[in-house]
Length: 289
Image (cartoon, rainbow, N blue to C red; front, side, top):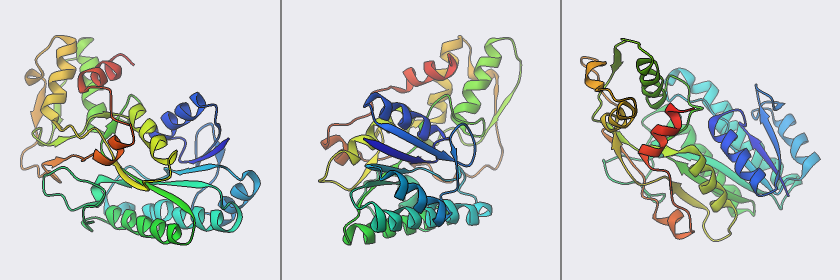
């Protein structure tokens, strides 16, 4: 069995590669950088040639930027929107037996502070959400004409591979430095904000659980457990035996994008998958990396 992973150089690509390898699936990783096949999912010629050459049983579209900023609108449209069209049209033309996984996001949905499921209505509050919605509608259209297309809506999931711009890694790295003697002050926004702290390795298994069956084609993939940034501070600083309150300063007049973002994973749970790594275990993984 053969799989293509677009966006292999990111966190999700890494763990999905490892999950596929455990299943003895041959993986061709594609990225614009890193130790993978170099290419751009926004190039229709590149994508078509790759799919025509390999006829993969599974294709995973993970390529995207990691920001919701309007400044990334063109890059997001190219990677997410155009990339989705290129993959699905190439599969339709040349590799009709391929299963395609398209990445979705919890940020696509109207967020009322309640657990979000895949059947909830979409929002258009950012350019990122708008292009994610576009990719989902493309997926549904191609599914209606015979392409086996799956959408997994991912919520916050973390790992040691996160960059320091993500609050999980920002806190974990600061805690490590403080444990080694640093007296730095960590500046954070609203630490009461709640989100999921799911381990990315678990999420990779959830993606494979979805695409390996033929009954459910869209599902939220998350732990369904919400914890605040303050909870994450507690977990990380508990491991180094220090009180985070001595090292954290909150930004004044900071306005959070939301107060809680959490999934309702009932559908993916019904397929036999659930997140297994606790927030405390994740903190240990990240601090000991």
